[in-house]
Image (cartoon, rainbow, N blue to C red; front, side, top):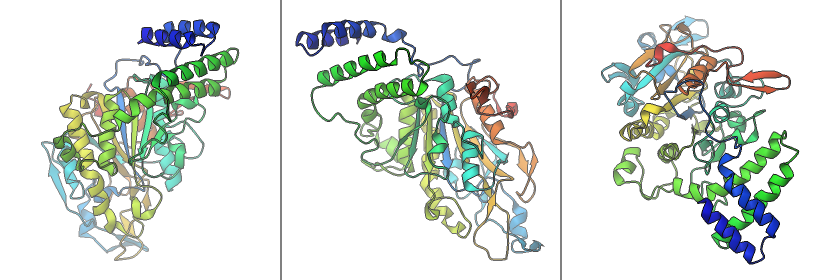
Length: 458
């Protein structure tokens, strides 16, 4: 590869397209490229990891735990009865069934996820740090509900780098924008190259990814020349992380022209695989497309992949203030694809070192202000999330809420604990993964966070 590059440069130089001095420098840079200090190069973890990558599934709007993963029969028994003034019990409209050897209880909204119950660890004791959509969403993404902070994916990119230099280390596949906007995958004070790259499902998921014209050799020569002048400009400005990141972004963009079109092309996937995800040949939208693309990106070395379901429009997210009857439509959109992702990763031998995370910003309340209310309000005091693969015990239910699903009764899990545990699986000590900014060391978990050792295989 390097030999071909040098030959091409010589050829172009012989045609007087490059000055001899620049040609010599480019050839020298080419020979030393593998030795360059690339901030996205793979980095060693703090200790042996059980996972090498993350697929983070975020359900926008706040999925009701008491209607999906946290069975509370007493709510049905006391449905529409008064608990106290302006507080009435609201039962679930969906039955819960036991799945797998573990007997994990999951509602009829998620039968396909039920089929992989023995692969997942259900956490029924999540408690977020904020009760509004904006604060809770950025809280589960960044660990802070009030101040701008780097996202979880950005910290993973910063800590571990990526094994494929032709694709971003952190990719977000999302049709819309969740509450909190791009802050959920922003890098804040970390170098800009660690922020998430958003991919929008459709026939053209990355705009302007294909070269505008001209031969590949000519484009390569142009990029080499740009790289040369960029590096000359960087000399003496190495401390400017934004400049270095911008230069690196050009290099990644050039690589993406080669790697990205193939990564998003599902034409070589078998009909069996498409059927598994519930996709039609040629389909380029739906959560099924997002999940299959996530598997393909994971195969190609992308370190952190986030899939977002929904946006800030009430009819397209899990916010159920007034209309929880939309849940069957929402769950049908994601249930089969998510289960397919887990099954697909397992059959390819990838689940063992891939963390698949399902979460949302909070749950929905077990009580409503008056009988017959069709929706549920925000509820950050107790809700459910789950994790599969990557060294996590499957078929386990960790923590529990009280008999109503109102408060955590056992083993509270904060976003900091959640992040600390996921980082641990990736071989990183959350207390040592730090970045110095404005005179102090910052970390994803701030001054909090405990690893949930009880849910780890070892």
